[in-house]
Length: 325
Image (cartoon, rainbow, N blue to C red; front, side):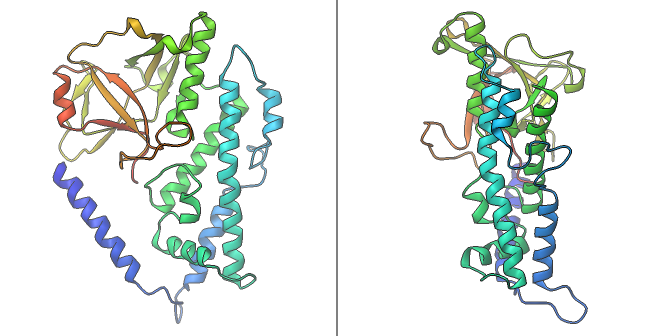
């Protein structure tokens, strides 16, 4: 598996260099020109990002003030605030994506001047990579362009479904722009319910055997989350513990995990409990934002194991919210 990872990385690097050296001129004869390809991609993306539709009844970007009337600030339910804050963050991404797509289409048609930024965006579309105009104002992602946009639309759908149907029983963790806000909101709900100081709380974790669809309802305390992937380990479904990777299987989905708030002083770990870090991408590095949180690292979760935790530390086992494809 390590050899596969190394070979894949080298291949991506090689093909990236080859793509950057390929000519980007217009096609001849019956071939499709580069401008037509770029316009086709941009038009398809704009079609999938409607200003308003039956599903996106609050528009895109969302009318947050109208959503806040349905989900007002509530002392007993911090998730309402989390939702509106997430909408505001994604509104910035939506506005930037739509504006740059519209400008690119106009530039390809010759209506406006093709600026340096738009030219780089056009090259990124031809190479299948995320334009710097987007990555600089967006959540971290190492996906190629098509997979990135599919993931982006899925995130918007996750939040719109939340608006339409209410708070979900199982939260899709990769769908949050600022994951720490969601986790803090969950702790805050617990602290206010049991009249505890939030800074005295920690997390307990239970990896569920049931699938997402088999869980009966929302968790009484804490939350159910899914959407994570194990990088560097497998899973023993019989004993419900970490296991070695199977050959040629680099990533596996993690079962639904119950994040259970508890008093930090009550947390006791055994030698076989592995503190597994969660990262947003496989790059496993980020920068500290103004909030004091990393742009990539999310938190540590405790995963049960049948061997000493050092075994998994040496293997560099981690959880990822997003894969590279």
